Image 1 (cartoon, one colour):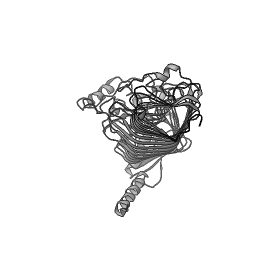
Image 2 (image 1 turned 30 degrees about the vertical axis):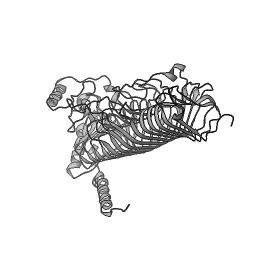
Image 3 (image 1 turned 90 degrees about the vertical axis):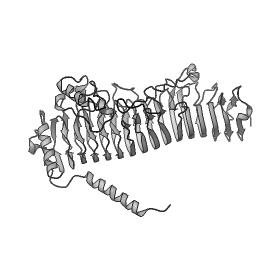
Image 4 (image 1 turned 180 degrees about the vertical axis):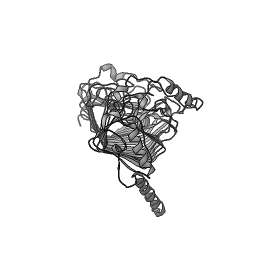
Length: 558
């Protein structure tokens, strides 16, 4: 295909312009102490810090410098082309008095209106914002754990929302400040800083464009809703070389309005969480498009106390469309996972929450074109991994390749035949269906599913099949290897599955390799090593022998 040089040149200019705009103007840094900040961590330095920021903006931009010391402050309103730079010995401490965080109304309406009202570092409609350095920003969030909004200021805020058709701030959330909140900003750079203990989400980027977050360390425990990074309705985002340990979700993509989060690259991160480590959802009104995630490590949180989720964490990778929207063109690769309830969880549901009050419920969303490869997971829980759409609304075109997962195992015999409810409107979570009837992958309502070079095992005896499919079309299983009990009635169980090819697989020593149940059609079993299974396959009484085309398989006794 010929290259359009004019388009390429325009893209280079646009990218260069965005990067240059993200770097504040050169000049001498303004020291916050010169504006009256004490740096002792006792008196409130809010006015002094804000004066330095405003003076820097007035001169056309530049750097506001925090030398070593502790700076106690309420909300700082960031300005365009101003960089906050923290010395390695500098600590910005969030005030523990909620009145030091003025109530705000975002100009960009979304479902986050319910809890976006206060923040330690805040900016809206800005350009060229940066927070850098090797210092620490500590929200002291545990002090806000039980606060609820009340009083004249809260009532005044509610009155602003009357008649706007927007969600009213919730009394439980509105008195818990975010650490960083940037709304409708462009050219953002956050690098190398250490972020600690927010009362809410640590970082919230809403309706922002050209966001770079690099080398940031996050520790967020002490309250509920302690996320690491929330990218919400944003475009052109690069996140790399970050480390986080959080009580709630770690690296999270959201779409709380009818604008997608798109063009996102995430790489080289280490994530620990009591909930989901890499997540798209649950809010999905605008959807997620063109997302690439690679070279990440997911581990158990180092904190024992668990306010949200589970001690071992929930899903390593969770992709969820439940409030309308489309998830399309997502690639995830080179992920190492240790100790989660389920390494993978893919869900298309229908919670159908509108992004604004009174708006019509969104239609069931779209979930398609996802590629996940080169994943190694150990210590996975007993639940199993679900890839679950809805009747008439399948997940489409999902490929899993080069996946090795070691599970705990240990399920009961009845779990192998348990019915799985649809739970169409339920909050999506990898444990929502209970213990699945497959110890490995349970796949339902999927059109176009490829499982290539999959290796599954468990520690404690488990009677469940490694793979169960229900209402699946265009299934391709190639190079599938899985542990099984000697009396296992199936290593792979297919129900209502059509147009399936199983090839290049190696059966474990067991009773049966493949069990075909009612509704299966157009199945091929070709070129597999099945000699260790007593029976290569079993067909339901309702199926004709022509349902399965089996050829060139090595069978017992061959």
